[in-house]
Amino acid sequence: MIHQYKLGGYNIVLDVCSGSVHVVDDAAYDIIADFEQKPRAALLDSLEQGYAAKGVTRQELEECYDQVLSLKEQGKLFAPDVFESQAGTLKARSGGVIKALCLHVAHTCNLNCAYCFASQGKYHGERAIMSLEVGKRALDFLIEHSGTRKNLEVDFFGGEPLMNFDMIQELVRYARSLEPIYNKHFRFTLTTNGVLLDEKVIEFANRECHNVVLSLDGRKEVHDRYRVDYAGNGSWEKIVPKFQAFVKARGNREYYMRGTFTHFNPDFLKDIETMLDLGFTELSMEPVVAAPGDEAALTPEDLPIVMEQYEKLAMLMKKRREEGRPFTFYHYMLDLSGGPCIYKRISGCGSGTEYMAVTPWGDLYPCHQFVGEEKFRLGDIWKGVTNPEVRAEFASCNVYSHAECRDCWARLYCAGGCAANAYHATGSIRGVYEMGCELFRKRMECAIFLAVDKMLTEG
View 1 (spheres, helix red, strand yellow):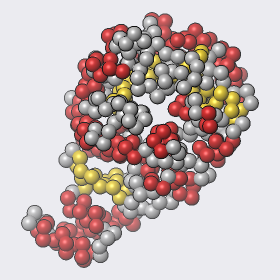
View 2 (cartoon, one colour):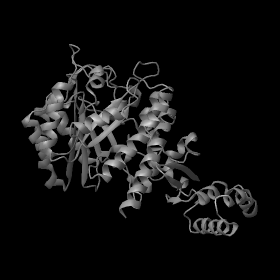
View 3 (cartoon, helix red, strand yellow):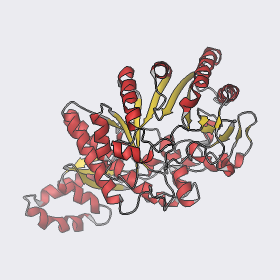
View 4 (cartoon, one colour):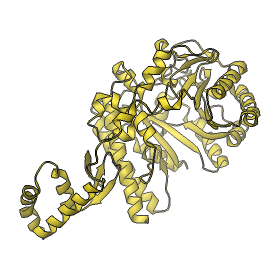
């Protein structure tokens, strides 16, 4: 399968199954478009007159055709899909190994964000705080099921995890004590709304956390529309100085400003520009996860605006890189020379198999977005997975289990997409969140463009 598009002055051709990316002239672009639909002579005949007017001879078109044919013979164009037979077995090879846990240390929050998928941190249940006993048992559970894997990932999540900060510190101390005993290394991530950030938290996070995710939606009026306290007051003025202090102390490394855009700010590039003006350079901006009909949910009318924003964002990143002022956008991070292994390209994120979420009382769910959905409860950290049918369902969920993915050029980049988004949009983890797919494809086009431009301009 081939995907072709034009962006930023480049004619870009992606060979889906080999992963090869080609930047070509107009003649090659047009030849590739009909290469498999028309015989050689008919294809060249159809192009000859138009290109003659551009000063391109028949002989030059024939040479171009032969170059395309050579690339096909090398497996760099029109490569067959040889991965489907592996899709059902790759997750099974992990042997039930778990490599990461999302610890819900606080099912409560000090903000009252209307668009919160977690119901202000309660996850459709009661407010709760994880005890140190449960936290320790979760780490023991992770070690017990990690096999020979050395690096283990633990996310401190909520609600607002800093509402249980003392326990987090104790839990990290416990984890560090386990490392030499079991030959493991824990890498911690903290996600916070910033309200409780202070010097003690900053020092701890910079010492112990591999990454920190900071929630900021961009412009003050945008952020304060939804990210308010229980009195209805916006949080922008309170958290921005704290985030700036944190990033300065951290040395501008290994953090992300994570924003959410909704129906009320599809022009989210202005929010990214606000973050840049505030001094933040590691950025992520996610489309809202909201039920259809929710006032925050993106609509079909928003889609053209969002698509245009993604392209403008790519051009801004190119411009700032050329000026020596680069910044990172999470969804545009792409390594054309390697990138994710075929395991990840086919199988996806590993939710429900390699990665699980743990509630304050120790229940296991496939990921944080399924917490509170009782039918997806896997078991608990004491008895382990007692609902193997759910785990098996997630294990069998891969890019080839989605019928709609088979004809999608981006399938080996998204690996079938987010199971939670699919479930909330369609009622099935094997469904397809169509708007999410459209946004993902546009992001991939922009990411490939930026990678191509960097390679061609910087060598």
